[in-house]
Length: 240
Image (cartoon, rainbow, N blue to C red; front, side, top):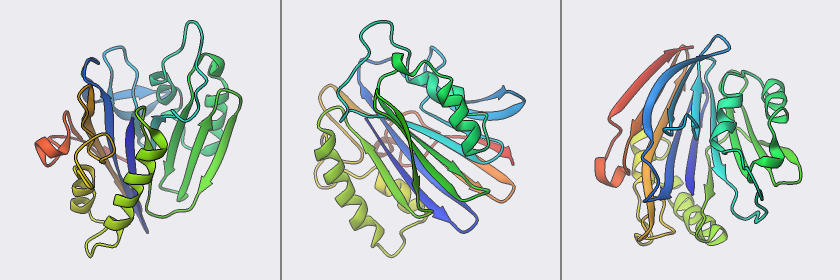
């Protein structure tokens, strides 16, 4: 359950991600620096080491959302989807990411969608694993959004997409303040379908924001929803 919004710019991009989880799930850890295959990585993480979003020192972001519309599930010994981003986060090209994904034990991983944003080549790729095959969808370099929900994914996509379409028409759309307002939005009503999601058993539990421009990449993180904190508290930077 997540919402990812990308603001594509002439020189770089900004990306915001609400992470929605069951309230009984262990709280995620704030971003730290890792070195994988000689590359600097920034990512928040689960206590077990998995992650849902990562940024590397080439200005490449990987953001994973569960794909609930695909109902097939692993029967025994599943591999956490949190391992998917770890497997690809040090790559700097579409070809290398494809090879890293193909090397995963995909038949033991539940369906997912992986958004890859590459600043240097202005490429956006959505990888889709539907439990049968891994496909690659090339997206236009433009401001856009991806949505998942374990409650009612089609309805969440319809309602949050409507909120996004209304927001994109606003005068200051495309700014960081606009992005944060969108990700703390309870429109049209606070509940399971609002961008900032709230249910009795689940909610938006964190917000991650990535800014990439010439020579610098920044990850900002809030350990709770933006409707509580208004802006991220943790800031980590990388030279690219």
